[in-house]
Image (tube, rainbow, N blue to C red; front, side, top):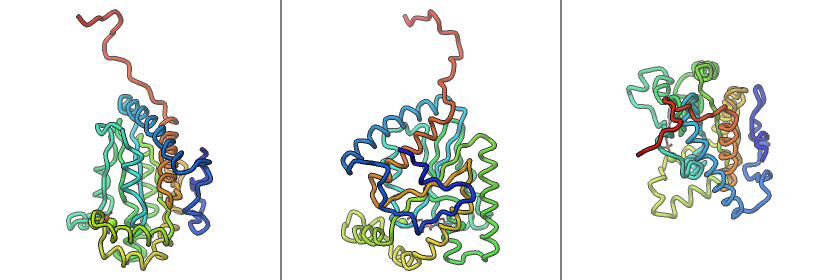
Length: 269
Ligand code: AMP
Ligand code: MG
């Protein structure tokens, strides 16, 4: 699978309007075959993550962004199914607290970046500060506009200090969102995921798309690329994200460390 077609090159426009959220062109099989493919990718990811953890010289930051019902939670649980929780952590960014609002917007983010050997998934991220903040006019225009460059600088700092960064936008259509919101309403076990505010946010769909378009176009770089993932079909979304993560880990020079002591000829009695 050549997932490069979903990667936004540095300086390239995201072009969300021209990308089909139902695309499944990189996988020839159906949903069932897709699930089998995911299960192989899960195993591979599990092996690579163990090696990554043991090697302990790299850090991986995975940024996940999507509109409501875009599938962030489902992606995390499906793609990382089976990995060792010792080396993987999820950091979720909700509405900022009073203390967070009293600081710069990166203040709450920096403590959660991965340490050596760690994979951290940002479930929402510092990008909210040029998305929801923009759509709801939470800070003046000139202030959030400056954040694109600040975010690039922040990510460059992380990269130069040894962090690998991949960023995913889970791209669903407005129709798909209606179906998923309705499904949450129809199923009492999904009510906890529904808030009336989601309907207000849906009214601002176009503004969110414009905000995503500009944020992704302005902040995709060679070393911290954005991928726009067709996410109407969950199984397809999962295999594309898993494939990119496997390829990202394979591109690092991962090795099990040498034992601290010379173990040759040692036998446990
Ligand atoms: P959920 O991910 O469904 O639990 O919702 C979290 C909510 O927090 C979403 O509505 C986000 O837009 C909101 N949120 C996250 N980060 C920020 C931020 N920096 N400023 C304002 N709202 C935010
Ligand atoms: Mg929500």
